Image (tube, rainbow, N blue to C red; front, side, top):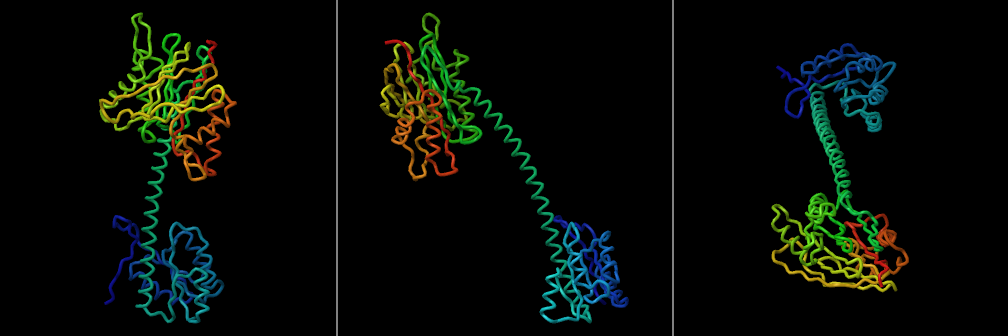
Length: 425
């Protein structure tokens, strides 16, 4: 006896979803019934049509998984029916087998071109037909699995998109919070103008610029670059900005009260040592940072500066000379008991003191080389006539013009500049 084989579509979990459907299209009633009986014996749910036209109507409400159609039929032959079948909107693939007495290679190619998947030569051999049907079932099974996998991928992609959008909203909010702790782009204190700029390479960054005033004649200002990029570095800048707060002066580690109860700025080396100690005792902090910090007397123009692994502070004299200051020093937060140095520079009316992060000097230009200190000096000379934030913007735009076309800086870029415009002699 012939074995009865039940044909089902299977989901990825191995459970059958439904019985496979077959459509037999044959104008010969006897041949149609013989084929239908075989397909039912093999486990298919079967419908019959005596012509291509009738078959198309059946397909509207009974989309078949496998079609077995005669080639030669009145009104609409098998090729025309196959073309129409392929043009129909379907949720899944339909496997199409043509029954034909034709064996010419050109005619077979014509059938394939119309969309047929396979051929069975008439008179039909049951064993051959079963083998062809089995091949079609394997293809349908793979197509079904692919659909399910694509569905899972689509659902996963949708979830990832939602997560990305939520993260993007959070990062935009984090950027707003980070921007809120930055000083005004331009501040004037007793005739001295302080300009600040920060451009992150991502939503949030690891650079920080800031300033605070102590009493009437002192101002502290700094440029900080936290190691790494992104959210972790941005969280570190938020923590550091709290240590150097311009709003809650009693919490600012760079300040102390004198005998009269007024806030005064600590020596810059002391500030670096306190911050180094704070970072090393903070649990879970792996980042370190570089810093240029200055305490400026607005009357005398004396700036006391410490450099902790940061790019050299730059003195731009009124006449346009560019001088690199300092001896680099050691970053903050790497090792305990580090000793820092400080130096002084006396600003004269019209002089400028510039701190900037290494995102500027280490940017790779279209020449393949870094901008470097010489390139920065060139940018300064090119834009020396500009002042304030216009000068800082010009430095950044000058850098962009030197980068490969369409490329942005790979690192955060920040700067703070003091223009000493005091009327004191």
